[in-house]
Length: 436
Ligand code: AMP
Ligand code: ZN
Image 1 (cartoon, protein in one colour):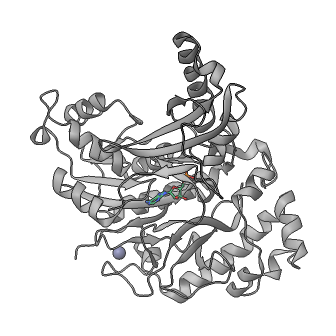
Image 2: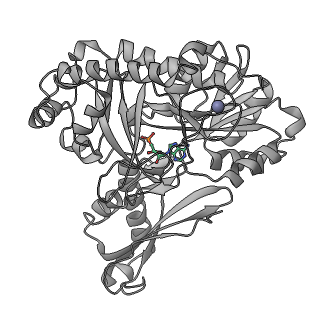
Image 3: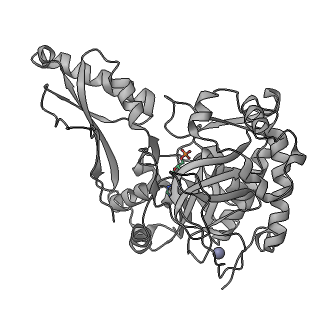
């Protein structure tokens, strides 16, 4: 197989070399972590007071896990390791304006991240001169600027179109003969369903590859996209706490994603006991970022369920592969690529005085796209009121929710008693999306 490399030496380095790099970088990053109020406390509690206290890679296991709650509780600067003057950029997790998790990047952090993306992109066979249309949302979400910088570094022609506006996406793909897109799988399916509408069909496009990520999808969905659009689709995994995309990416073999192990230490743990599992066993992915000093991240519990392959890959890369994301250990929903926690919705609607106590969060598909409907019961007096007032209330709820979860849900108002009452533990979330 013809295998393209961005940095052959690192990508095919022997295990011992990778572990040597990991150890040396772990020491450095622990040094940076000790400069943050949060990690100083955490690390000194377990007897790690200086980088030298990390002697072997196994010493990583002395470090306690970091969770999303730690990030929230230490917002905004508890995990900042550098002077603000050194911070080049700030990103945050998708859909988290309600509960912020914020990540700072110094100049070399952005540079390291960009390099990982250039590596990832090159591994799929994309080359300078490819026309790259980035359909991921820009802004604080990492999917926009992350891939943007990586693609520029490779030397692709970048179209920073951002998310949404399907007509314009299709027209742009035609006008500039886009060859590679970065997109959520659900949005790419949606784009496919809209082809032909304005007289632009598949033969008018030059599309060859898609980088798909930000939301769970099955091998069947990938194959379906590949067949419908006659392209190659590559799975891309990342999360803002660990930079964003570029944590793990598929190579031309398309047999799941290489984790860039010179930049990340990946562990898989039993989500209930916290015990580290053996290679090949499924559990919660825990990641340590070795190449970002402004916001060090040690043993971050991703809440994503996956496993690591013990065996190598035909492409020759030695960095281990990560399976598809098989689920979550928490109740986070991913709606068209945007993370939404049911608690964010509850928090908002319960603050609206007209809303009674029962509500339901419903997710289904509208064509290829996810649709979020929030059903709320309101007080009887109000329910019998004027239609205009009800419309205004509905709009108010939509606005409040959009401000918190970034996406705009449908809102349905119901009279009291109309929504199912659950006995025992309330079942607030109904996810009717097909599991293929
Ligand atoms: P964010 O921090 O907003 O980038 O969201 C990161 C989360 O999106 C991850 O923890 C995963 O749950 C999900 N995610 C990202 N990429 C993928 C992917 N390729 N497959 C499945 N889930 C993904
Ligand atoms: Zn490979």
